[in-house]
Length: 343
Image (cartoon, rainbow, N blue to C red):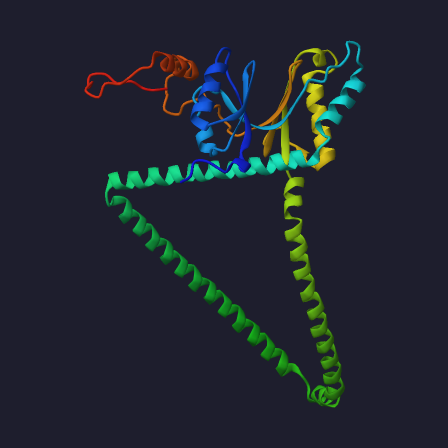
């Protein structure tokens, strides 16, 4: 499997790092991911990489991983700026390009698909390994389960067929009883009026057939229009939540909660998205300071610093990895009394 994309498909990321860990993270992204356009801010490292997202997720010095949505210079508002003026300037800065938002969401969706495929592959490998260790017991149990499920399906089909047969027999008997009640005079009237009725029925049938041809052509047109507007509908049905952190001069005009509300209202007007604070499909992190404006979308729910193989908390994993990288530890292959767990 190729671990890199083409240079034209490189993705812009940013990672958060602990205090003093930025230099370790810069070295790691350059060495492991061949990252380009690396920028370092206090607590954050921005970079572009064509590596697959699974390799990006394996960074050891990073705390959290984000897809970079927007990077901009600070607002630089005067000291006595009104909240209304600050809101207008912020909205005009962040929502000037609609394609930037929709393109970022498509990239995020593609990366989530890659992560899901990797998780499924890992689960399949783990299940296969467990079956190999358990032996043939798993295959026997699976075969019994399939036999029972097929047997139950056949029983349900037989019951359904019998119920349908009973209903059809009952309908036939009801029709026969109604036919016996008819009088002979009614039968004669029916014979006399049979010809005009048949002509009217033929006209009705022809009209119905022509109508079905017209209505049959409409669904094909609707299917085509639905396929053309599929991406637009997906963009409009996104639920989102905004996490905002604000510092510097802007925090004296607007609080973080007010900025979150402002961004949410702007996104709803621009893209038709719906805010959902409990279970959103998309989460947007905004950080505004005197040094930068950063908007990003988290790529993982849990931080990269949380290691699945560490059960007992101790020294933070990122710091332990930095210490081990500075120590340049080399494992001796003949050492059998002790072992090292690389963080």
